[in-house]
Length: 366
Figure 1 (spheres, rainbow, N blue to C red):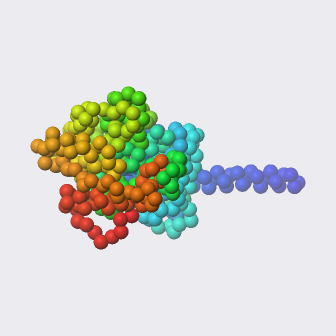
Figure 2 (figure 1 turned 135 degrees about the vertical axis):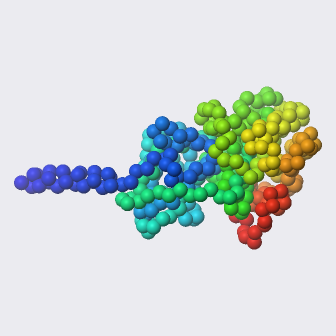
Figure 3 (figure 1 turned 60 degrees about the horizontal axis):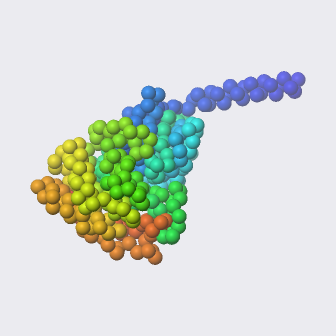
């Protein structure tokens, strides 16, 4: 009798568990109630895949709980924000789908989720398959900001080592965080959406430490792709139109060993500008950044501006040499940490304000 009672109990427990699972609200990742910013690809099953650093999604959700069904071609870290507050960094790793809880036990009204990929495409390509909500929960689209910035860059833009405490620390994926790099800091200051097209170690014509003068798979090759490192599908430049484009490329071109000639670098830079102009038109401001690391880029970028002097919407930043100190402002492999990136952002913000007409605000750069 006891055995029969146990079997009956287990039977009903299974039924009830199934009903609870069925009661969850399941929504495809490609739902119009989810707003993505950055380059993404929608799958036939309604999933959404992306690998560029900084890609983020936003949605307002009700019901108190939200989770995702996700997978990754490698390993990617994401920042989770609820109602504008950073809550946690999650790790998505492996091709098997996994349920990851992003928020639980909140009030039943609407809350805003932002999920931001904070590591770069070399290490992982994330696929969001579904959103899972509590019974009665629903999603609601988040409108885009009125301002939008696109940045083409390298490890500085990726936030390589931005969470590392010491300059001589080795690189670790878990200390890379684009949200603590200058691009995202600037976007926050101006209340702007943003997209980062960036990959560590890549230049316009030459990659860091390469033994040949003109490298394969440079940023010149990657800027026209949907994915950074997971396929060569062409990007149509129609997902968004930026109000400002920034280019921060050149440190890797003039890295040790061999380098491109000045003419090769300058012509490669001009080619990128022309491609941006073709995509977004003649009047979108483009700001060419003189990197804080200085070097030969400081001499070559002005040559680009001089050769393209007919372009009245092409600008150059002020020099930033010596503003980032090794003792206080550097993380892994002598890259800027969060403090260093704040300094870079504070240097660029007045220039951006002058170019765009966006007014400076009385608020902390963070």
